[in-house]
Amino acid sequence: MLPLAFSLNSAAAEAVTAELEETTLVGNQAEGENFSIDSANNVSEESLDQWAASDLDDIFKNTISVAAGGRAQSQDIYIRGLQSTLSNVTVDGAPQVGSIFYHAGTGGAIETELLKAVNVSAGTGNALSGAGALGGSIAYETKDGFDMLREGESFGGQIKGTIYSSGEGGYKANIMGYGLITDDWSYLVSLGHSDMGNYDDGNGDEAINSGYERDSAFLKASGKLNESQSLAISYEYLEDEGEGGIAINKANAPSDDVNAQRRDTVNVHYDINPSDNDLIDIESNAYYTKRTLEATGREEMSIASIGYDLRNTSLFGDFKITYGTDYRDDTYKNTNDSTEAENNLIGLYTQGDWTINEALTLS
Image (cartoon, rainbow, N blue to C red; front, side, top):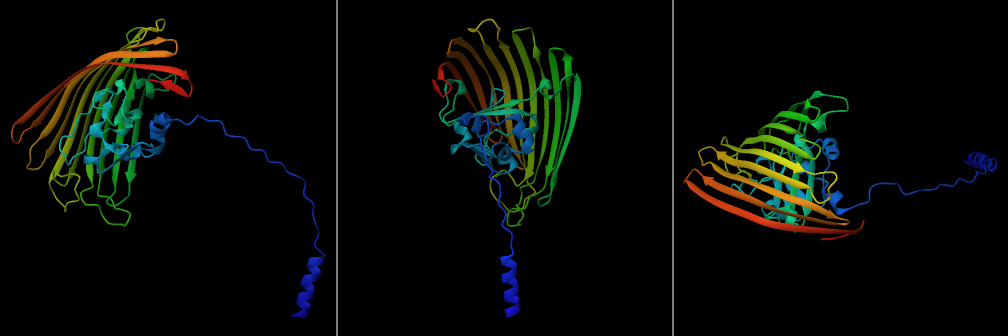
C-alpha cells in the first residue's frame, strides 16, 4: 500500500497548472411581444395548427381564464369558473344559446380544422360582447378561401389525418378544397369525420362510453363587392354521436343506447368600411343556428335561434365609439311532451373606448 500512495503523491506533484484567459458573457433580454391579458386568452391560427387541436380541451389548454373538458358530446366551457350558459359563445357571430339538456354540453362545440382564431373576453363583458355575457364571451372565427391559399395560387386542397392509440384507438380525417372564384372572391369546402374508441385513463383503465363519431361539413364564400364593401356567406354542419344514453356526462355502465347532438349554422356577414372615412365602419351579421339532441327511446330536444347584429364604429382621434342594435328570437322544443317556448330579445348599445397610451385604455 505504501508504494501506491507514494506513486499517487508523485503524480499530483508533477501536475501542470494552466492559466485560463478571462471570458466575459453578456446577456440581453430577448425581444418579443409584451405580455397582455388579451394575448394570454386569445388563440391564434398558428397555435391551433401547432397543437393539432382536436377538441375544446386542446383549444383552451394554454389560456389563463378559460377551461374546457368532458367527453365530446358533453364538453363544456368555463370562463373564470362560470359555465358558458352565463357567457356569450358565438361562431362567426352566431350565438350558441343556452343548454339543450342539463346532462349535455352547453354549446361551443366546433370543428377545430375550421378555426382561424378564438377571441376571449373574460369577466363581465362590455357592450359589444352581446346579451348574456355575464361571465365573458368567446368568439370563434372560421377560415375562408383566402386564408388557405398561398401567394400566387388560385386553387388548392388539403387532406389531413390523425391516428390515436390510447385505449381502443381511433382516427380523425379532414379534406378541404378552396380557391378563387374571381380575384376578389374565394370559396372553401370542408368535410370531416372522426371515429374514436374508448380511451384509457392515466391508471390504464378503460373510460366506458367515451368513444364517439363526429361528422362535419362547411361551406363558405367570401369576397369584396367593391373597395369598401365585403360579404361572407357560410353554412356549417356538425354532429357528434356516441353510446351511453341521454345522461351524457355521467359515468354509466356500458350501454348500447345512442345519443346524438347536431348543430346547423347559417351566417351572412356584410361590412362597409370606406378607407377615407373614419366615421363609418359598419358591421352587420344575420344568422340562423339550430342545436338538437336525440337519444335512443327518448325525446328530441332543440334550440333554434335567428337574429342579427348591426353596428357602426366611429373614430375621433384616440377615442372610438361603437353603437348598434341586435335582435334574437329563440325557440325551445321538446318532442316528448310537445313543449315549446319562445324568447325574444332586442337591444340597443353604445361602447366608447379612449386610448390614453399603450398601457391605458378607458372604457
